[in-house]
Length: 507
Image (cartoon, rainbow, N blue to C red; front, side, top):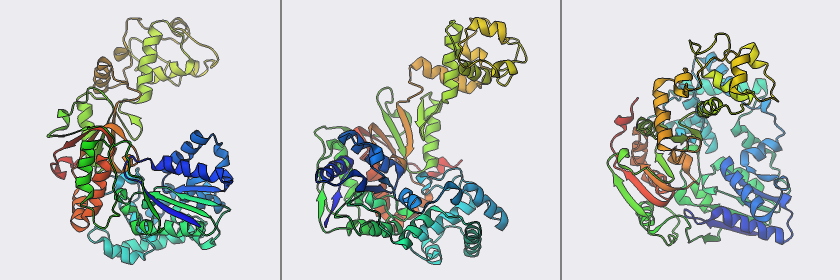
């Protein structure tokens, strides 16, 4: 058996290294469909698959085991979407026991940020954390300390939850892994690659141990210094003890000198880390500190603003909006795409350019019936909805057949009356500045969501919530890892705002 742990500091090419090792396996005669590359997140799994497909011209259909651990367990169990617990199921349970559910945000950004998280969601998060650590929930409840949750309510909810699953033959994502482990069947693979292995929970490592039974080649890639998923049960010790052989990727292709210096000052404070020497790329870079976000020179280039929690990220996103900056958040531009498309289509329409019916319908959704328009031709009017999709219409046709009575000189911010004044002014300023509204230069994110990503220019908001501060007092290494990840996303410049206090972000 050939087993190895690859320790990859920021920007040292962990994904590319995996891709090269997979190529070596194929050249040795291992069929691609007998190679597994698994990870904790869809993002990591997708990046690994896409890199191998691109590098070695392999059809992704020939890579059936390039997936998350949950996806593998889901397929192995033969489950369907109807088998899996949904938010609607949780609401039914919550209504029955009198404990509300209703979070809209089920992703990693909720770390230390209870804004918008219901009581029931907090209870279930604690329950799943206990299961991911293979720990009785009673013990997890005690270990979590001051969390504002009541044990008897927690116990009552869990009993109702498990009874609901049993009587309706439902499973949750943790069940998928537990059932896979119970079946104890390793798929037919000859090589196993585990990416971002520092993020796997104790339960997921149990699944990995099932997968390890047969493969001759086993590679575990990650970085214990970037292990920031502890709130989801990540077991860093299991990662560091996975193999005896360890290889350190020692050359970063991302982090410049001055930012490397900043990163080292943080990482050296982490207790119990695996020692590793790595080097910055041949570029000086820059590190600057600012009192205020508005002091950062955002005029040109690619930027990412990263905050510790969703709440703090939202606070600074609103600051950007107040100043007229266009940004993206969770993949969505601050100016809604439909709104922007309606504006652009209106301008084209008024110039007499052909217009597809679907675009005309979108324009109508933003129109307010008034003196400029004939009544009865709103977005759901019969005439509009029956327009032939295969035809194209000019402004003249719209006036004659759809009742749109307008002056060609009427601008979008006058005609599209359902766009509120504040949004109109925001868009007008963005267009005047020449910003790319569809693909903004500025991204707003939490540090956790940006893990694995990079940007030319990084803004780090070091302020932490009260909960995170308490965590820092108990386990400072966790917070050091978080901010180590933050600063090492930068390719050119790092901008750090002086911390204030969480009180600034109370809504």
